[in-house]
Image (cartoon, rainbow, N blue to C red; front, side):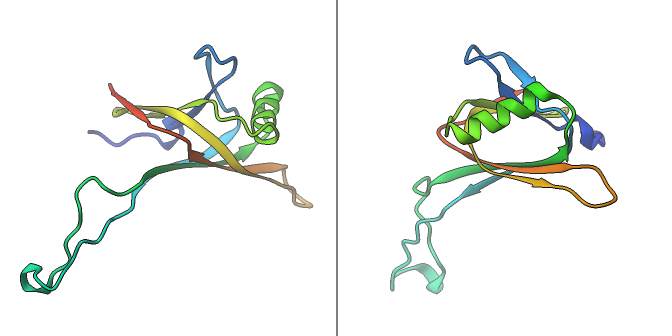
Length: 137
C-alpha cells in the first residue's frame, strides 16, 4: 500500500437513518482505534509460567476521535443532536486504499474551544455501540 494523504481518512454519519452518509465537515484530524480485552486463563500448569489467554473471549471496542473547525451548519447540528438525544446512528470511517468500517457509535464527548486570536474549533469522541463491519476496497 502506498503512502496516503491523512485528509482522506473520513468520518461519515448517517443523516437520515436511511444510510444517507455525509462527511462530518471541518475535521482536520481523525483517528480510529480498535481494542480487545483479554481473558487471562493462566494456571500453575501453564507452560514455563507464561501467561495464557482465552481466544475470542474478550470484549472488542472501537473509538473514533476527531477535531476541526466549523464549516457546515448541517453536520454541526447533526453532531449536537446525536449527542443531546443520546442517539447511536450508523457511522462510517473511510480508510484510504484499505476500506470502510461501519457501525453504530455514540458521541461520548464534544468539546468546543475558542482562543483569543484564533478560530473556534471542536473535538469529538465516539464509542462503538455494537458490531462493526469492514468492507475492503
